[in-house]
Image: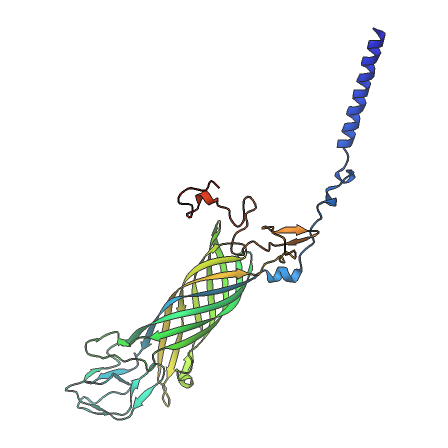
Length: 354
C-alpha cells in the first residue's frame, strides 16, 4: 500500500511539472521561438518610388462616330435669292426699284467670296431684309474621331491631356426659314481632318464592383486645317464633356464607352469691313475604347516561373510572366482557365467530365 501511494504521488508531481513547463513555453514571446517564421518568409522590400508613380499613368485610345451641327448667324445680313443662282448675303439695303448691289457675298463658310456687281430684279427675286427676319443657315456633318490621351489617377480624380484626329465631311447648308424661297449652298471641299488638343479633368462619381462611371471634361483648342482661310478666322476654345462608363477587365486593363458633347465655334471676319459671321459647330459623339495602366510590379525574372498571381522571390515581389494583363487576378481558383471544360460551349456533347 505504501509503495503504491508513493508511486501515485510521484506521478502527480511529474504531471504538475510538465504542465508548468508547457505553460512557460506558451507564454514566451513570438520572437523567442526557436525557429522564427521570418527564416522562411522574408518581408518584401518597398517598390521603387518612380515605378510606383509611373503606375498611376493611364493610356487611352478610342474611336467612334460623331455628328456636327453647324449654325451660321446671319442676323446682321439681308439675303437675296435669284433664279438659278446660290443665295447672296449683303449688309446694305436694296432700292426696291431694282439696280445693282454694291457688294454681295456668294460664299461664307470656310472662306468669303464676294461679288461687287450683282444685278437685282424685284419681279423674279426673293429678298429677306436683315431687320425683318432672324435668318440662320444650318448644316450637319459626320465624323470619325481617333482619340489618344494620357492621364494620372489619384483616388477618384484624374488629370492629363490628349489629342483627337477627326475625319470629317460637312453637309449642305440650308436656311432655317423660307426654305421654299431660299436655296442652299455646299462647302467647297468634300472632307477634312480636324485636330483637337486638350487638357483632361475628371472625377469618378460611381462604382459597382468592376463597373464605374466618371464625368470627364476636355478643354483645349482645335485646328481647322489649311482648307479654312485662317487669316480671317478667329477661333474660340473647345470644350467636350460627357460620362465615361468603364469596365475593369484587370488591374491594368479596362474598356469603356463615352457619349459626349462638343462646344466650339469660330468667327469669320469679312475683310475691309467691320462685318463678321459667327458660326457654331457643336457636335455629339459616341466613343468606344480601352485604357492601359503601367504595372507597378516588375515582371518575374525567372523565365521558367509559371506562377499566375503576384508573388515573391526572396524579399522582392513580382508580377506573373504567364497571366494575361487583360484578365483579373483571382487566387481562389485557376487564373487563366477558371471555368471547367465540362461547362464550356466546346463541350457540347458532354464528353468531358472536367
